[in-house]
Length: 280
DNA sequence: CCTTCTCCCTGCAAGC
DNA sequence: TGCTTGCAGGGAGAAG
Image (tube, helix red, strand yellow):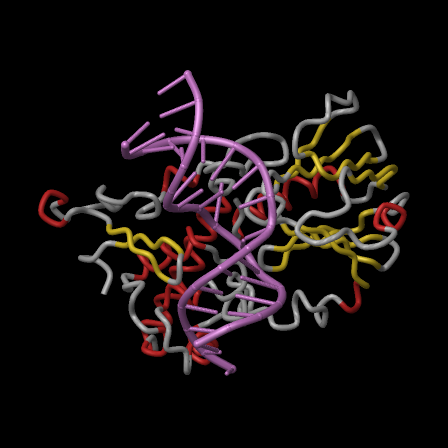
């Protein structure tokens, strides 16, 4: 499911019910997800108070009052669900069960198990393996035209592929890269190294805008993504090109009958959608 | 270094 | 209907 807007939506949902509360019980239903849970995982969480929820790229970060941070990555299909005090049946793919002080519980469910969790020292987060090479947050000021140009220098792959690299910019995935390139009017096939000057500025703005719009919509609910409350995001209805092969792109003045509409191609094994008329 | 490929896993839709 | 195939929002690690 999850790219930056979906993870941010999950963060906002969990923040409301977790910050300031203690985790009274933690159970894991299997020894691993994508990676094994760290040794003593449940005990390290038990009775700890959640001080803050942060996000870095596609990672959720729960700062605990033990100076540890719980890292959660949702992979492709991971999602959190919030339950009231009455405990329903454990569902298939419920892997982590967390009781929260005050009667709520949280569950992490992940059919494909590409997600994972880990615990690190809060003051060593930035230097941890997960984050030491991670690029700037796209919604912060250190992501800008000049910094993007620097990151793209020497990259001879198509811009589509390079924007998926989390060390260039954090949090973009397959959907929002296609959408951002459409908004920027840039062909996904253009070599990254050739995006300089005003094109880089336009791309930065396009990335920011698509992410802000998607967050405002609660993310995109294609398969698994939901808000922790169970509500759906609705940005999937706002896609300009993603998943729209053969159809009109948004605000289309192209003649679909002549152009064939939105193109779908594969780049480095991932699908890319774009409008060959508007994106150059 | 940079780049592409393969693989991890389940579910679903399309095609036969 | 039931089977097979391919594809799906991520990313680590190996190989080129």
